[in-house]
Image 1: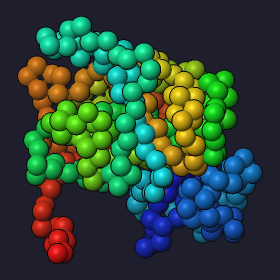
Image 2: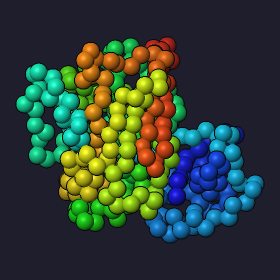
Image 3: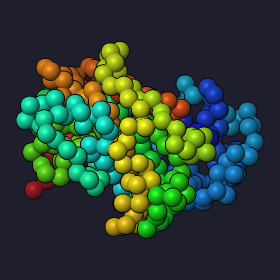
Amino acid sequence: MKLATFSHQGTTSIGLILGDQILDLPAAQPGTPRDMIEFLSGGEAALRAAASAPHTPAHLYPRVAVQLLAPILRPRKYLAIGFNFQSHVEEIRTVPAMKDFRPPPVPVFFNKQVSCIQSPYGPIELPYVSKQLDYEVEMVVVIGMRCRHVSQERALDAIAGYCVGNDVSVRDWQLASQTMTMGKSFDTHGPIGPWITTKDEITAGRSLAMTTWVNGEVRQQGHSGEMLHSIGRQIEYLSTAFTLEVGDLIATGTPAGVGVLMQPQRFLQAGDVVRCEIEQLGHIENTVRAEDRQDKPATTK
């Protein structure tokens, strides 16, 4: 199934993608929550109910008539791994000062603050404090059950599904901080979507093609099979330290082609259109706009 969060005529709900239509699940199946985390907390029973919801015409909307929102509007955690794709590691080594770079033997994780979440087709901001805005297509795992100490072998049990993410990065801020969090967490720099593709639709172990375009030009081409640390390994590693909760997000790494490692470097500019696509999961597309400081409320003293 493909599960979406959407807005229609001022109301936010969750829905089931059916081709070029979307079924309003709470309307079609009374008692269904309108929030995706609450819905996923219902586990397999909730998914079975969604699959059996009647396709009543009054509860079906053309997709063009709704606004798709981030499928998880308010995740508790958004974690991301660095240096996890072989092709990305190899492009890092093309920088003379990094020619001997070796990724650490353990996964390297950082937080993206959850206030960065953006809708799949919403704008991403070029901050007024930087000109080094970059893109990273990533396969994002959506956690479907509260869990701790999950083994690699049982990791699939913890997953609700997958979506497309762009780990938008402000490179100078990222490199100035050892944790990377500051450069990865600017507002609007976490577009995800366009929906959650449930795990049953993806064959375990299948490698999915991943592509980024900027203004129609291919910048990244890779596949999920490049991961140095598998999704199972990532879930095992993280859940050793802390509890993963329903709706938590894990961005699993990016392939080669990022702007900061091009020669010369090619950063995003206002007006650029960035499209990130992953086979079987769909695509997100975001236009870069210059941050308007006037949009922010005045600081109170």
